[in-house]
Image (cartoon, rainbow, N blue to C red):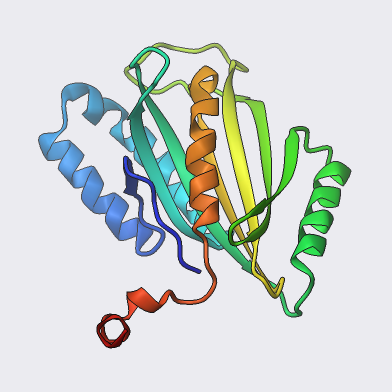
Length: 209
C-alpha cells in the first residue's frame, strides 16, 4: 500500500520501539526542561504501550501533528494512524465496506457513516466524538478520578480493488471543536491510497517513460 502523509505530521516508530523510547528518555533527561523531566517517564511509558498496541494491530504508520486552526489560529494537535489488513480471499470492495458497516452496527459503534466513491474506488468514512479518560500527568493539574474529555475521530476505510486488503486511516484530536477541519485532509489522503506500486516510484521506469 502506498499513501502520502499530509504536512505537519512527525512519524513515531512502529519498529525498535524499546530502543527508541530509551534514547528519547535519555535526551529528555539531559536536555528537557524540569517540567518535561518530571512528566517524561509517565509520557514515555504511555507512548511505549500505545505504539506496541498499534504495531500489534497492523499499523503501518503513526504520526503526531500540530496545525493552526482556521477558526481562531490556535495551535492544535492530532494523531494520524494508518493500518493495513489483508484477507485470504478476494471480494467485491463494496461488500467489504458493507460487512464493515454491519460489524460496527453490531458492536454499537455510534457515529456518522458515509459511503462514497473516490477517484480510486469506493470508501467509507466514519465520524464520531467519544469521551475518553483524561490522564493526570505529573507536574500538571491534578484531575479527579473518572474525569473524561471529548475526542473527535474520523476514520477512512479504503478497500483494494480486489477486496483482499483494507486500509484504515484514522485522525483523532482532543481539540474536539476543531476536529471537522480535518475532514478535507482525510478525504484527500484516502483518495491517494493505492495498492500497487506507482510507476513514478521507480526512478528507472520514470526515466524510460
